[in-house]
Image (cartoon, rainbow, N blue to C red; front, side, top):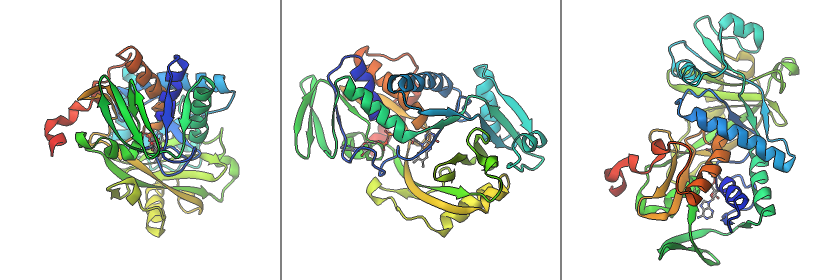
Length: 370
Ligand SMILES: Cc1cc2nc3c(=O)[nH]c(=O)nc-3n(C[C@H](O)[C@H](O)[C@H](O)COP(=O)(O)OP(=O)(O)OC[C@H]3O[C@@H](n4cnc5c(N)ncnc54)[C@H](O)[C@@H]3O)c2cc1C
């Protein structure tokens, strides 16, 4: 979110500085790795559809600026019981926004994608515009364009605090002190460290991810032949995955990790219980993948709000400070549009989208004063 905002502000001619506590491409936050899902249908809520449509256009624009491939359209399957959250929410978003989609019953799904073995009581909604973003490449592209347009970036410099200074902000890092007109705090899991006064109800959740090596024909899972998918394996619970990429066929269970008090407390090892949890979730739908060998593992973290909607808002006490926490496990696809929105907010004072679902005030005074 920080890289995208830096890029959009630089493109609009602003003098901007990005400050990151670690090195470029580090793997201790939420945005590293080889893949993130982008999908146009949105089971979480239809309000995300216009945002993802703008994000899609901005990713393509960024590809045009850099000449790098960032997004591959694979199509996507949202699978589950007909009355479940994933299928009903996906259909609702598609109908409300008149999106191209197709309903596949279990038989049609097995014919089209033989790796999937759904039981007869399952349905799938096909989203033809879903696909895969390459997060490392996306972040690098935002940084490259920002720097080429005049932005500066300080890697390995930790912000230790900030305070209002007149209409501006004084930002102190471990080695420097900066005076700026405006500050954007896009600190992911570390947001609480930089916004202790707000007592935001954010939780940091460990997320284990796996790259598997299914034994069947390699073509069954190949990019271009196998889609991204989200599968509601039990009511309200989702696992998801990708086609085969360089490290294997990635899959993970959403929101099944331990809550850590802080990013520094996220457990980074991956054990037998984690893989068994994934195998159990995949078994009813992708049985061969469920039993396949693990090629690689990683851990990452979600920064969750209680309602799993984002935060994109000015600090309630300081209009020169903008805060974003666009995560809850589904934020990456929106990074391009969040950068655009934050630049609009800082320069125009308003955005082209209704941001009320992402307000800080929705958490209430009571939560913040606990
Ligand atoms: C395993 C996994 C899978 C996911 N899958 C998807 C998906 O398929 N699709 C999707 O759309 N989203 C997905 N997400 C969510 C998405 O990746 C996140 O929403 C997004 O990456 C969050 O970005 P961010 O900029 O808010 O946080 P981060 O990427 O963590 O960035 C915050 C940055 O702030 C820096 N920072 C913090 N404090 C300081 C400080 N004091 N001084 C200087 N720097 C500081 C940190 O070092 C970090 O680099 C997934 C997340 C995970 C973990």
